[in-house]
Every structure is written in structure tokens, then in C-alpha cells.
Amino acid sequence: MYCPKCATENSDETKFCRSCGSNLSLVPQALSGHLPEDPSLKVKRAVEGAIKRRRQPDLARGIRKAFLGLAFLTIVAALFLTRGSSGFGAIWLLIPAFLFLGKGIAEIVTVLSAANAEDQISRPQSAPSTNQLSSHQEYEQMSPPSVTEGTTRHMDPLAERRRESN
Image 1 (cartoon, one colour):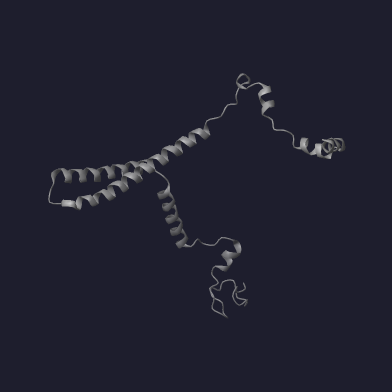
Image 2: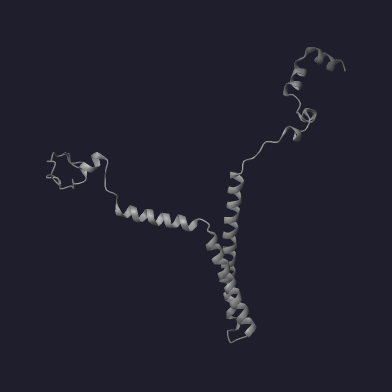
């Protein structure tokens, strides 16, 4: 086997090049096309999969966020009704309340609209029957004028003489 770094010939059992010291243990696997997978790639794929699952809208997560927002609103309402010593500090709880409520409702709407769109795609669309089509005359009235109609008049020598005489 030859070293990929310095091209020195080595025996097939050699793990390191005798000239430059490069690692030769993976060369036979590289030539056969069966390299071992890098463990960091497995971790990277797992993280990317988790991120992808996290970004997909989920109905349960949307409901959970919406109820969490409602819980914050309930706490704020209870603090204002009891008029405890919290004062105006409870108003800051409205920020996470509306944040969670908005994100939850948005995720629920996204899931439901995606399901509705998927249902529309899977449902076969039927062609209109002959009784539903309108008469042919309506389509003739809607047809645009011919493009060549105006250009042929300009090329006609008789029409040109008529214009000059008028």
C-alpha cells in the first residue's frame, strides 16, 4: 500500500508510514468505500433532528403554551384583585402571559391550517358535469380580437389610398 501523503510504499499490515509517519489504518477502508462514521457526525445529526422536530408545529405544544399564558393571566388577575403588597410588579407578568398565549394560539392555528390544507390536497377534485358548463356563445363574446387584424390593414395598399383620399 502507498502512503496518501508522501507516496512511499509500505506493507499492507503497516499502521503508520515508515517515511512520514502518517496514519495508514484507514487507507484500506477508504479504498473499499467503507469508512467508519465519525462519532461527531452522529451527534450533529441527532442535534439537527431535534431542532427540526422542535420547529415543526405541534398541537399539544401549542395547547400547553396557550394554557401557560392563561395561567400567567390568572396570576396577574389574582394579584390585582387581592391588592397585595406586590404593587405594580405584577404588571410585568403580563409580558410572559401574552407571549405564551400568542405563541400557543399561533402554533394551534398553524397545525390546524396545515391539516386543512393537507385534507384539501388529498380530496380529489371532480370536473364539472356538462350541465354545469355555460353555453359556447358566452365564450365567443369574451374572445380577444385578433392580433393580426390591425396589422393587415396597414399593409393593404387599397386601405392606404382610402386614408389618403379622406
